[in-house]
Image (cartoon, rainbow, N blue to C red; front, top):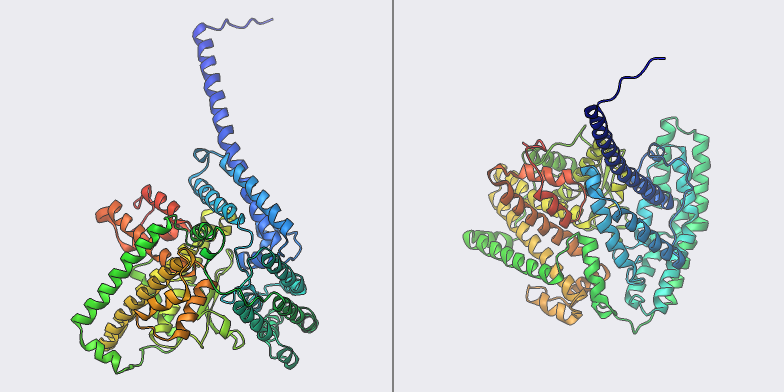
Length: 613
C-alpha cells in the first residue's frame, strides 16, 4: 500500500486560501447570475403577459410573435372591467416589488437601465391607477371610437393567422365597446361623466364612422382595405382565391352584425348619460384633479419637473420666441408687406416622395444613418369618413421585427401642401417618428435588448423629438427655398418656425391654466384675444380641445424643451467634443426613456467609447 506524502503547512494554507477565494467567486457569480436570471424571468413574463392580453397591441409590436416565444395565444381585445383593473393594480405592485429587489450592480449596464425605466414607469402607473375614473377612453379628440377603425384598417396581413386573428378581434368589438360603455356608466355614477356637449360629439362619431349605407354599398374603408390586404396574400400564394372569398364573406357579416350594432349600442348608451348641467372644465375642477394632473404630466411627457417649474420654463421660452419674431420682423420689415399681400410662391416640391427624399439628404450631416437598408414609406390619405376625427397626419409605428415597410397618413382636410406638408413629413417621417422608430427597433434587435423595452412608451421622448426635428425641417426648407432663389419665402419659413413654436408654447401654458389652475373659457378667450384671436367660436374650440386632451400639447412642446435642455447639458459636459450629430446619436441610442433617466445617463455617457464621430 502506497503512502501519501505528508501535506506541508504552506500547501494546506494555500489550499484553504484557494478554497475561500473559489467559494467567494462562486457566491459572487451565483449572486450576479441570480439577479440576471430573475430579471430575465420578470421581463419575459411581463412582456409575454402584455402581448397575450392584447392581440391588437401585439400585432403592431411584433410581426412574428412566435420568434419571441409567443406561439400559443388566443386573439383578444382587452376589455375593461373593475375587477380586472384591481387585479392589474395588484400585479403591477408585485412586479414593482420584484424589480426593486434586484441590485442594479448585479445586472448588465443595459439591463440596469431597463430596470430603472421599468421601476419609474410602474411607479407612475400605480399612482395613476388610484384615480379610477379620471381618464377618458372615448374622448372626442382622439378616442377609441375613432382610433380602433384606423388600427383595424391598417392591421397588416402577413399570413393566414393574421387574417383569422383580425376576424376574431372584429367579432369581439361589441363586447369591447360594451365594456367601454360600462366604464362610462361607472364614471357617471361616481360623478365624473363627460360634459353633454362632448358626449354629443362622440355619438355623432359613432353615427358616421361606420354606417349601414356605406356597408350596403360596399364602399366602407373596412371593406375595401380588407380586400386589398387579402389580394396581396393571394398574389403571394399564401392563401387561395377561394380562401379570400370566404374571408370577405366573414368580414362582411361581422361588420354588419357585430361592429355596426356595437357603434349603435355605444351611441344609444351614451345618450342616456347626457347631463346638460355638466359643462366643459379642466381636471382641476375635479376632486384631487390637480394631483392627478401632476402625475399625468409625468406620464405623458416623461418630465419630472414640478408644474411650477414647467410653467416658468414655458414662460421663458415664450419670451424668447416672441423676441425672435420681433427681431426678425425689425431686421426685415419687407417680410410684413410680403405676408400682408398673401404672396404665395410655389414650394420647390409638390410630391410627398420628393419632400421625403430631400429631407433624407439634408439630414445626413446632422443625424446618424439608419442601421441596415433604407426603410420604405407609403404616404396614404386618411379615409374621407375619418377626416373630421383624425389628426392632420400620423405615422403607424412599425413592429420591432419588421421595419422595412412603413405608412404615413395625411389628412388632406387639415394639411395643405407646400411648407406645411414638408415639415409635417419631417415630423412623421424623416428625421421624425419613422426614422426614430426604425433606428431604435433595428438597434435594439442588433444589441439583443429585452423585448420588454417595447412596452415602455414616453410621449415626450417620441413627440418631443418629432417637434425638435420639425424645427430642423423649417431650416432645411429655408435652405431649399434660398437655393431656388426664393429669399422672401425662406425668411417666411424661418418666421413660421418661431410662430409655430410660440403657438405650441402658448397652448401648453393654457393646458396648465385649464387643468391645474382651473381657468375658465372666458379667461382663455381673454388670453387669446391678446394674441389676435378674436373669434369666440375659435376660442371655444381651442378650450374644448385642451379640456378633452389634457397634457397633449405639453407632450409635444415640453418634450421638445426637455430635449433642448438635455442638449445644453451635453454641450457643457462634452465641451469641444460636442456636435449635434453626437448628441443625436446619444439620444437615439438611449432609446425611449423619461428625461430624468436620460439626464442621469448623459452624465456618465462616453462619446468616444460610443464610437461617435
